[in-house]
Amino acid sequence: MKPQIRVAFAGGRLFTFWLGLALLLAGVLLLAACGGSKGRRPPTTIPAGKLKPGFYREGVASWYGHPFHGCPTASGEIYNMYGLTAANKELPLGTRVRVTNLENGLQVEVVVNDRGPFVKDRIIDLSLGAARKLDIIRNGTARVRIDILELPHRFSDSDQHPFAIQFAAYGNREEALKLKNKLTRLNPGVFIETVEREDGPLYRVRLGWFKTRVDARREALRMGQDEALVFRR
Image 1 (cartoon, one colour):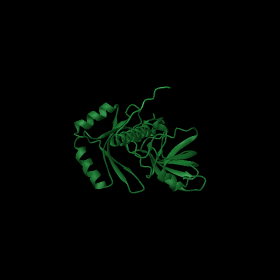
Image 2 (cartoon, helix red, strand yellow):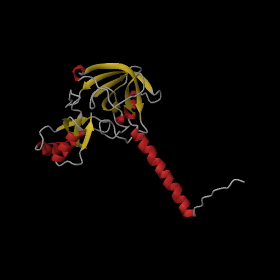
Image 3 (cartoon, rainbow, N blue to C red):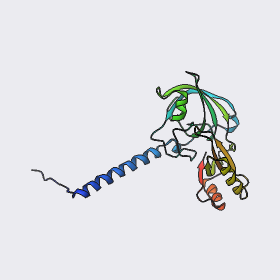
């Protein structure tokens, strides 16, 4: 007879063991989801000279929600699947575009704040909120037309300076202006970037662009903003 090994736990200890194991697995799954987020993928950009407002291209759009909801995007923002945003591999982060569903004529304006889709023959990945506006939730994909409406306010045409600082983001423009005016005394390049969302505009106080993440972090520290977010466009 083969020897049997048994591990016994007293009542409370057994419960604690399984609870701890469940929490550990949940944490691993969450980290895996965010680690695989579109924001972690390297971007492919179009030369700035070829970018201008107007027609961009036609192709297949898809949408994404869980498990990316709540994870960092390529812009450094936390992904809100209920907002009006999108992921694209080429357009500069912060570009505002109009997406038209060529199958039903519905339109929505979104801001590119993430990278993707990383599936062949798809040109844009919409947030759940944007996909609802175009009525593509059920089918999952649709053929669309993308028109560039506005490029980022401070879009840099050089890949040599891809980093920027975000000091804060407000739903109230007056609060954003107050912070901008304060920081402008330390660096006149501080600006406000406005993002239109389904629940109202978001005003982001930013400064860019920097050659390296270290340069951006050093400037944030010099300005006394040690909690500022450094991100790559």
